[in-house]
Image (tube, rainbow, N blue to C red; front, side, top):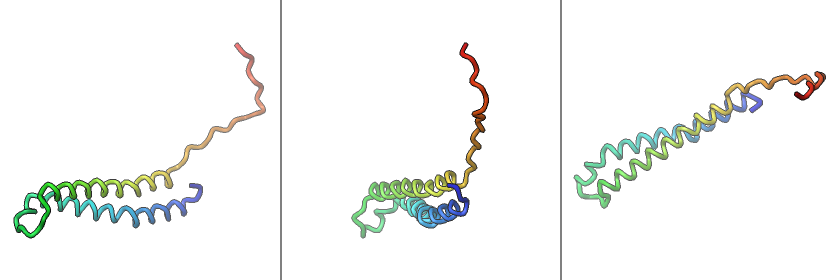
Length: 97
């Protein structure tokens, strides 16, 4: 991006819309994975511990994906682009060998 202000706004938007929900998904997924052995203790749910583990792992995967989005947006919008070399078109072309 040419303007760093636009890049900062894009990074802020990506963080608010993707980063924070991703962190919440990571926390919920970790809670489900860690609590899956006790999912059948009360007997009031139709979910088996395996299903709870699958939901937790899916939440972890989605959370990691959502957290990586602001990282990628920040990298591509705020990095310094390398300067292109200046080509002098007035130089004569060297003879072929």
